[in-house]
Image (cartoon, one colour):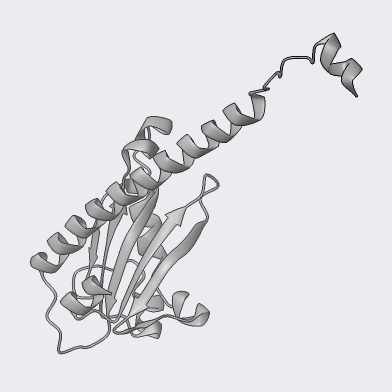
Length: 168
C-alpha cells in the first residue's frame, strides 16, 4: 500500500516465480484497496519475464521502449517499473541470474511524470521485500527441519519393573 500511495502508482504487485518459471501474485494493490483477480492479470507480463530472467530492473516508457507496447497500450499502461526480488536463499540454491520474483508498479495517468527517482525507490523497496522473503524462507526451512527431527525422535520410556507389572 505504502509504495503505491507514495509513487501515486495505479497498481503494485509482488510476484514470486516457481521453479517452472510460472509466476504467482502474493500481494496486489491499487491506491487504497486490493486488486481483484481480473485486475491482477492486467499487468505487463513481458516486463515481469524480462526482470525474472535477466535479474535486472526494467523502467518502461512508451517513448523509449518498444517491448510490449501493443499489449500495454491496450491495458492503458503509460509507464511501468519492475525490480527483481533476489534473496540470499534463492541465490544459494540457484546460481543463475534469474530472480525469484519481482516488485512491479505501473502508471496509467498521463499527467504523472515518472523518472529515475521512482525507479530507485522501487529498487530499494524490492531489496527490502527480498530481505523479508529471505527471512520467511529461512524460517519455513527451519520449521520443516524441526518437524522432521521431531518425527524421527522416538522417546523410549523405561519398561516397567516386574514388581510394577505384578501389582496390576
